[in-house]
Each structure stands twice: as C-alpha cells, then as structure tokens.
Length: 108
Image (tube, rainbow, N blue to C red; front, side):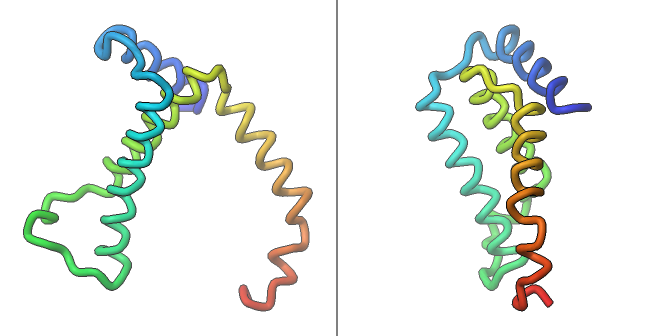
C-alpha cells in the first residue's frame, strides 16, 4: 500500500466507522499519546527500563501503526498529501545532507 492509498483508506474508515474526524487539536494530543506508547515499549525493549507485569501484552508494530493512523488523520484534516510531502522532504534531506553524515566522525 502506498501512502496516498493509506490516506484514502483512513479517510474512508473515519467517514464510515469513526463518524467524523476529531478536531486537529484533539488528534494532535492523541498523536502525542500514541508516540508515548511507542516510547514506553522502546525504553523497555531496547533501553534500560524493565517491563512491568502489565506490559506483557505490548505490540510495538501495532503501536507504530496507531501513530501512523493518527498522523494520517492529521494530514487528511489539514489537506496534506503525505506522498508529496515525503518526496519533497527526502529531496531536501538529500541535498542538505549529501556529505553531512559521510563526514561525521561520530558515525564511523
């Protein structure tokens, strides 16, 4: 599935199952909540924190998909085509960082 297709799929789901989009501010708060859930798993799975008994049923992929879903909602609400935005962003990074990381001694 391409990003543009995902935007259409989310829009269709919102309009049929979700009734309507939450407002942009609510969705921004939900996005932060979902990112926090990803951070919690990362800190425990890859970081130095230990899992609690209540963390036994965590699913990193599902939490990342929640982040993507809400980000897509925000893009749809604000008229952003994420395919175009990502293409432009990759071009910007490719120009700006053409030699930056190659010359970074910390990455060698």
